[in-house]
Amino acid sequence: MTRLFNDPADFADEATDGFVAANERWVRRVHGGVARSTTSPDGTVALVIGGGSGHYPAFGGLVGHGLAAGAAMGNLFASPSAQQVTAVARASEHGGGVLLSYGNYAGDVLNFDAASRTLEADGIPVRTVRVTDDVTSAPAERRHERRGIAGDLCVFKVAGAAAERGDDLDTVTAIADRANDRTRSFGVAFSGCSLPGAEEPLFEVPEGRMAVGMGIHGERGIDETDVPTAEELATLLVARLLDELPDGVTAAGHRAVPILNGLGSVKYEELFVVYRSVQRLLGEAGVVLVEPEVGELVTSFDMAGVSLTLFWLDDELEELWAAPADTPAYRKGGAVPQERVAASVAAAEATPDAVGPASDDSRAVAARIAAGFAAVRALLDEQADELGRIDAVAGDGDHGIGMQRGSHAAADAASGAVGRGAGAGSVLRIAGDAWSDKAGGTSGAIWGAALEALGRVLRDDQRPSGAIVAQAVGAATEAVLAFGATVGDKTMVDALVPFDEVLRSRIDEGAPLAEAWRAAAVAARTAADGTAELLPRMGRARTHAEHAVGTPDPGAVSFALIVETVAP
Image (cartoon, rainbow, N blue to C red; front, side, top):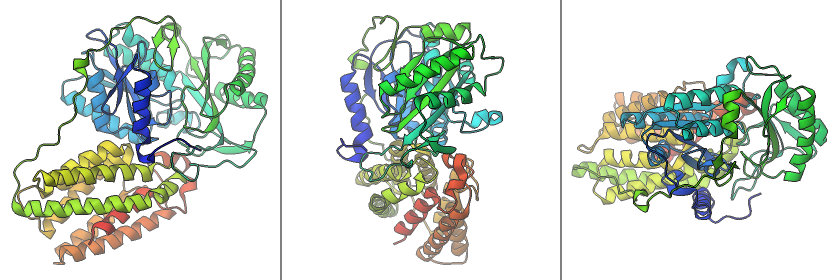
């Protein structure tokens, strides 16, 4: 369990602040994460990594010479927002373009891809490499669907070394892709992890049992067995990874980096006992071991677990793996003296969003919208734990805290915008941007896009009629559907689409807006409850879809709760 925290909602931000304070030799605080506090030559490719907090030393601990230029760090187990990734990339780039690299999770893909589009629009070349090393998360023929776990380090290390030696963006990207293709990982857990303030762990493993193949966010494993001896565990890990070799690799005579990774609360001494057997078994298989790593490298907060990674080398990858690196948590070779970034380049504090002219009618509606955001914030404060519990059944348990953080940011932003005289459209746009930025994850990206679409239709120069509100909800639905989910995938879409359809139908029949909204909210609630019987086909839950049957989708439930709450 987590014992030391203040307000759980502030934990990730406070941990980052403390991390920077303790490691100013390597990193500086920027919006959304950290960037190097040392300079890089003009024209150098900037490797920007990231993901949710709670995985230290990934991701901030890997920023420094020979490795990453910056790390975007979201809330605990939630992807950073597109705004955070964009800000970190801008603070990290030096004219050579940006390589974004991260574990292959739905929220990270949405937000890093959105950041990539923004950066490209600003004239900054961007490439992306998603890490897909976890062999249990999808079969070999669908490797592109696999999630990234401790293999992150292999991809980040060689990409960072290639950038440091001056390779161009396409070359660094090709090297990172090759490293990802030659990396395989497999993990087990003996107990779940507990987020700050949570009364229960994200998942539980019965006493004396071991979950096989779990993810680093608490995603369920594929099997469960009695806790083995260290020798038996090593045999399990090695056998599974030797069972699937990269194309062109044969174990006997081939070079590989073994990484035995502790996931949070397995002691180093225990890892060494396991590695003793790992080394022997790989040697018996004829594998030539190169510069192994044993320790905590990509963790899962306080999870008791272990993973083994095999990174199969070629000549160039071996050279890059051995190249010097100097970061807060990972060092290799001799430290290279670095010049500190001048204080003048530190990011300035953000100024409030500008608001344009608005009609008195629109300002009146804006005030009611802000009151609605305040009500949603209170609702999600009450429901955060339950939404997290639902999400943890087959996902990672972060939906409640992500929605809570997003709604708090949106409510504050909406109130501030109303105080500056904003109209309805601007309030929704500003609140949506704040929600997306602070919530991160898939839900943050989706709610940010939906609120932006609402604001775009409502505008600042009118008092919206029921027909205009229905049109705005239709635009929000289109924005959400653009993320790829359809009705039946067991997502927020399953509640959103019926809400949209009923609202538009009742408005077309001549019903007053309040009456039509209440009817649509009933349809959303019925549909959200009905998702309990669906198999998830999107996001992290699809990996263990059968576990989700009998539990409604948290995104659909939170949507139904929100539209019910704003109805009055």
